[in-house]
Length: 267
Image 1: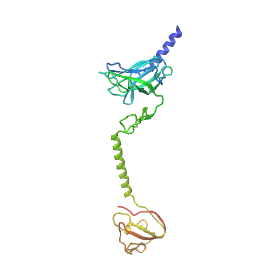
Image 2: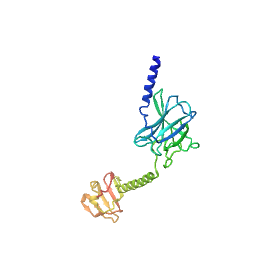
Image 3: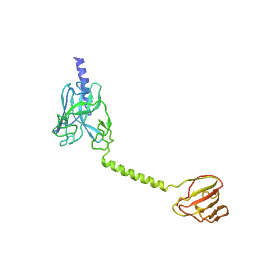
Image 4: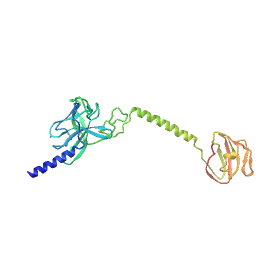
């Protein structure tokens, strides 16, 4: 008798600890879910708990559970009423299995029988749903059939769903970012690699600029710079026959040594 009492006490302690997060309010608003005893992949042991939960913020809240008896059971999900908590209309019902022996909890992936029952996995007052079988493999993806990236094979939502409105916003943002990138590229300086001796270069700025200022980074290596009219700039002799560098014009340039990444200053 003592062994029986000890076993019974241990079972009760385990059972109560299993329900620590499975407490729920019984209300006057409910939705029944039928689970057949021969449902495929219903790998439950007699005494296990099958619970129905709803999402509230970042928490899962229990709204009802039933004990598995090895044959058909009816699981009741309770809705919010007065000051009691529960499902809101059309809220998704989530199902969990608590293994009493191993004290483990896993989410179930039920497939509903919508031929014989009028409702599926959304809570409806006085609703009636029937589960035909359970899936064993979880396929993550977008499970919202109104989303642009809906995946009909997905069994577990991975929060990747993109609405049509969000797709339009993302497309507009991509266009804006591309235009901004092109604008930055357009305003980026043109780098010119000079070799020792003669070079032909183009003046890349959009506004005219005094040749002395435009070539300030390389004045000490310039032997001569000539424009299209043959006018010369000779910095060694402080002679400027060119005047201003003109947008779109080409120039002959002779330098004493090579120079990498030369660019005309912009203001």
